[in-house]
Amino acid sequence: MRILVALIGNAFALLLAQALIPNVELSSNFFDVLLIALILTALNFFLKPILTLIFGPIIILTLGFGIIIINMLIIYILDILSKGITIQGNLVLTLFLVSLIVGVVNTIVHAKGKKL
Image (cartoon, rainbow, N blue to C red; front, side, top):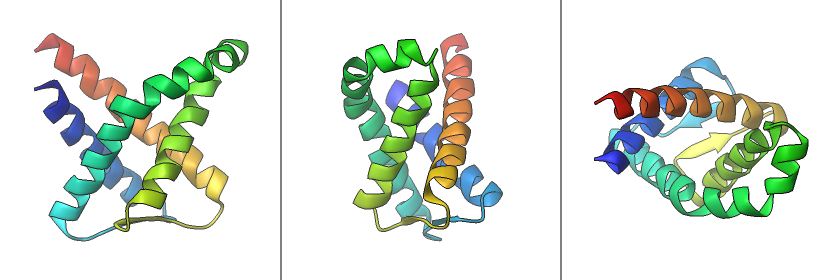
């Protein structure tokens, strides 16, 4: 159930990022968007804890800003792994904005999911 909620939240976050940021393009096929969200969910589930452990001191020194950098790295890896998402333009700014949107949506979805 938790992974399904994360998958739906990631799909919604990616669609919202595409709507708000002109440099982000997603595939128009619904199943491709779900596949991209599944890859993002898997990266968040498996890779993010490892990166958080490795970059723990940096996260502490930057007062949590390091988490945004880890999210940017995960979105960049998603861009490399999936052909259904394309991030263009100023890469650092676009990755920053996408990671903020995905992070805020995931925080809201997980907070609502705990109340269920």
